[in-house]
Length: 103
Image (cartoon, rainbow, N blue to C red):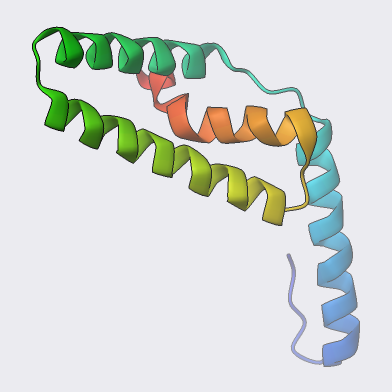
């Protein structure tokens, strides 16, 4: 995004809209690497099973609720961003559990 001080505002708005549309199209066309998200989801499931096994039902409910809320917010964000269907679900899954990449 380059800015020119002398550029009229309508021209700048139009140019920025075109740049945003190009970035959105590139993001939608790019394949998603979900390996890290699968790792994060597996760790989360293992932690939830351990919490359930130990009888920590309050902690189980809190952790489950946090991840459910996080996924719901990510899904709403991807739909608001213009994605839909399977790609929106994959992006929300990646946003929620993508922290598995750092492990």
